Amino acid sequence: MEKRIVAVRPETCSGPGWFNQVLWVYERQEDGSIIEYGVQQEDWLTWPAASVMFSAAEAISEQLVHEASSKLLEEEEEED
Image (cartoon, rainbow, N blue to C red):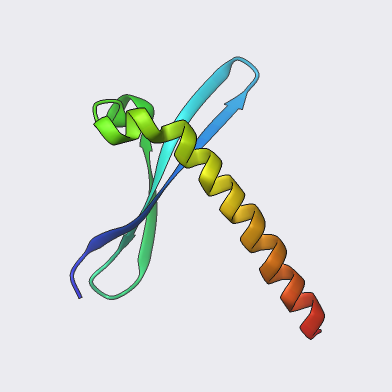
């Protein structure tokens, strides 16, 4: 199996006095394992799609995570 990126998830993080937008990259390794690493905003700002789509992709990702969490966790609770 060859190494390849299987997903990219945008995330906005902030706290008192700071703000950051990170692209979390999920990369499948040759052995099948998946590693996760963050690409900082200053590094991805030159990527045309990331710059244009960050906010929309983050909103979509958050909604999918919310829906999958509620549905899958609901199913697990019903099985118990």
